[in-house]
Image (cartoon, rainbow, N blue to C red; front, side):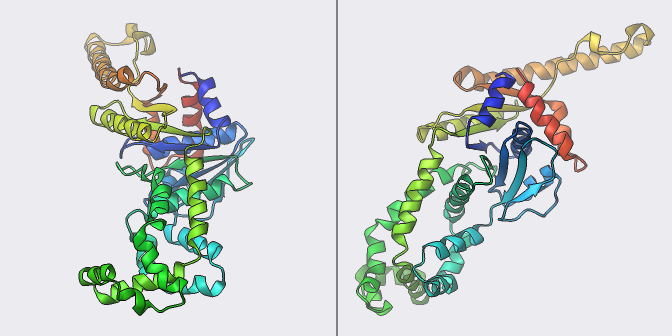
Length: 363
């Protein structure tokens, strides 16, 4: 893939989502290409939905990132902003947006069930990640959103999160839980329903009462959430939303990249690019020092090292070919091993920009 095509990826799209296993340099890659997008004149915001602080470290801004985008001091024709998902804050904002009255929003947020699920329930983070992406997508300050996903096999679950929310709102059990609120009845009326009594035996009466109170307080917000979920899902599958896989040329990492590619295809999404990170460069004798000035034993040692590097590069090529040979429709860009120096805590934003430019020049 030529630099021109990488630059087009950054300039012609609205959202770029990075996925990959842990330890492959995914966050650094996302930050580097976001910075390069700013160098191309784009107003870029990069968001991590990974609770770890890797993005802040990659950008050299320490622990200063929050749910509200912060502008990064970067000399560029465009702008670079960064933010880190706060699931609870994002959920609270949605409750306030769709509640008919401030009092109803306060009632929901104070509910014990809501306080438990807003940051901890499985699936909540994925949906809030999709919501935050949608907010940034519609923020007039930005024309490109770069998303760094967690380094897990569940990293792309936010693709199906909007649809799961829609199915839940349409589920008959949800209708049972909010029915008394629609009829102006009390929580106790719901608790007498046979299916609800059965649930109470499993989770406890108090927990169930908190749950029912939450859903009854939620009544009236479901249509807004449903419409929003449909809009979010549309963005995630839009033609101007692209997905980039990141891997190292190691068999296990390549296997994970194939898993992510398969996951995307199940959502009818074709990955736009594979970034093959930390590739061992191939040196030649001409790139060494003048051989005439080196003692024979030292020259032999250098030649042995050179041969070792070539064997390592061959092994990496063999591992990468597992993916490249089976995924011929996915372009590949290679980032050399020297770029791994960015893992050094002393790295600077300047070196991050250099990495982005390097990937854009790669063939």
